[in-house]
Image (cartoon, rainbow, N blue to C red):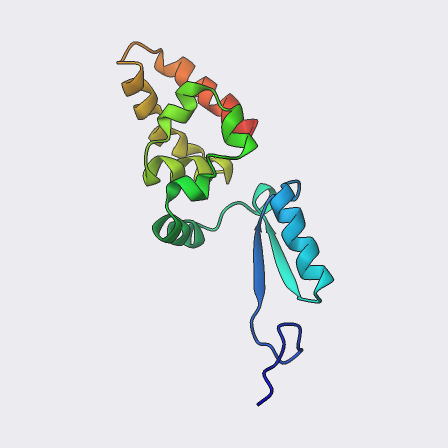
Length: 137
């Protein structure tokens, strides 16, 4: 019995690659797919944002720490207070949504920062700092 290869034109599976273009892992994946003749569509998070339904699915199946990639360069560049604000799936989702243009998502991050600072932080300064740091991501 002949099984079609992944590069076969009769393969009905469509590959969707999500990421940012300058990420080394994304570059390698796109290159590998191209080299192996596998057609794919690239969804650029920086230009197209994060699809809400996909984000919910990823958070549920992979966990927020994997989705946020706490081992990546972007995470390591964040200051300790911003990292401390991301404590669960809801706050990880807020970061992703804010990065996708949902401005009100920043509010989900302010609470944990204020809690970590034991209420002694200036809320306006926390808001400005979170916006500046997330914009740099």
